[in-house]
Image (cartoon, rainbow, N blue to C red; front, side, top):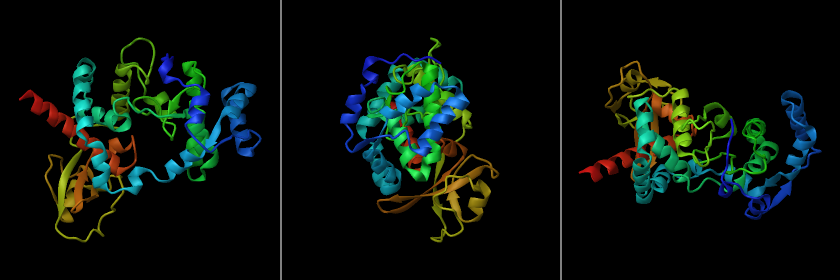
Length: 332
């Protein structure tokens, strides 16, 4: 893969560092850092001196550690989380974005891609490319890989993938900016996802998730497809419980641990065209006036492959529905 980044998508190191206080240079003499360097050199044939140079420039940033310790999905109730994304400006921007990129979206829809969910993911992730992140990806992944023990294995793997991706794109690892977790571009792909799911949507010989909307939209569609999206099937259904006792259910899990039949047998009332054997999960959401219930199906689970939070998947679904409704209202 090759990538051509526009000047505004690449920041000099000093700018990123200035935006983030309490930064401390990575010590490449640390055993875990040495092990990582050895892996890049011995497994992937990187030049040792170049890797050491790049990692010497990386910094552990306290604000990244603070952010990952209290993500919004785990610290605020559903109704507040939903309100952050279901705002008129985001809905209207999604509607106008769809009109602006109608050709590629129609092509993707004809291939079975879920356009409302694609638009919503882009809206939730980066406000349609307006907020793609202010941290150097190198700093984010190094911080979390070397100094966040709860998920160090995951982020060290992503740091490895980032070095491989940068080599494939012929891009310096010190250049790209992203989220505090190292997600990149308008769709906020982690390095592994970039390498596995990103596609050349406009057939120009490059895969650019920073500046090519055709690539961005096609890549989100491919991500959902490769993770098992079933075209034409529902995502969620509103539900009511016949009893306030939720002990028969595993609440908070996004795994499809029930079926349509088993949920109905336990007293969950909902309407769906899915067969009794279809996998499903009961979802409980903290609303303003009490607990709200929904039933998620296969496509709900697929959205959680993008972000494991049930709040995230519900927000994506609701935003997609709101954009579709706004378009319908405009057509009247």
